[in-house]
Picture: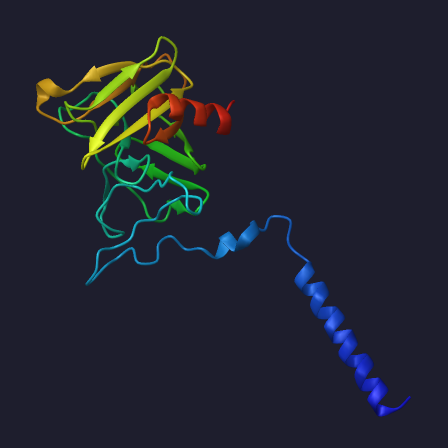
Length: 238
């Protein structure tokens, strides 16, 4: 065998080996390289405004992030439904005539483009979220034996209503733009007004007899609530 032939065969062997290595993927590997995306980059802005660990699909309307100043902020004030247009905040126990806030643990928080999770220390509530295109899905796990609440940051000019089942419709105006949310809970809630306390927003309540897990799926539309309802029925029918 000549030296050139041996070299050619060796090169071909290494090329084949390279293709085999590239072609082999772990079964739990996330497609499209999402495992390499770090939403925390830019979370502390020394000169510029800091970024937020946003969970969202590329170029889609649903962009969920915890409401806090930056990564060093030790309190969470809510969770966005779509950018800063809407936000919700779960809490347990009695309402204290002020918007709920909670400490959080950065060692427990999980933030990826396709899943978010954190634990609210003050209320012992686990928050989980998965984004869709026009829809989002929250799961709030409350402690045993406590009344369950979700605070919604709407003003007196905004509209919010509950259906006879477990649906909710929110209409909010922000900077001259109207946005609509249609959502559904796994259990029917009671709507409470906080205007007598001077605090902006309203909150939903579930009795301590309901299950510990409150699931909330919703869709956002800048057209009308019917459009949001259609998006939810299409994207998350079950």
